[in-house]
Image (cartoon, rainbow, N blue to C red):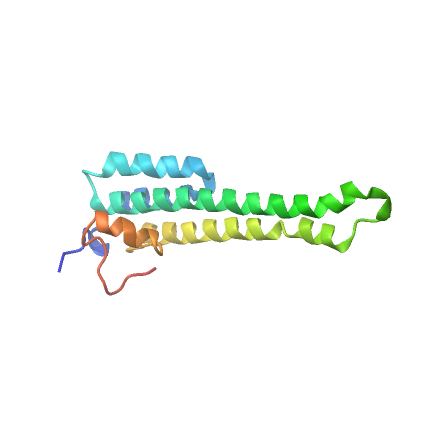
Length: 158
């Protein structure tokens, strides 16, 4: 069995800070992914802990941006479709009908998705600041293949 890249107790305060910042940059959207990728590039040969955390933070944030764009695109389609009857027959509707309000209120879905992505990324930041091993669901497993033994099988906090 591979040894973990770095044990929680041996991650220095600087390493924990840098790894935490890589996760916390999710609040900067795409620029956060760039920042995490830069952290990875700068620390890939210096600290396996920082490199692993920064690499998975960068990938997670890029995936998050793609998911956010897709969810906003879907919302735009739904909202636009709710406007079609109003545009086609404006005299028929004295007030906006229920489907218009449903389309408008469905903005909650992409906002909730973005919120959940940010909260999960910030949870990764908290774990990294604590020096704990953190692995994102799906993304973490994929990145771990690039860093064999990065996280022990037991005691992992997904």
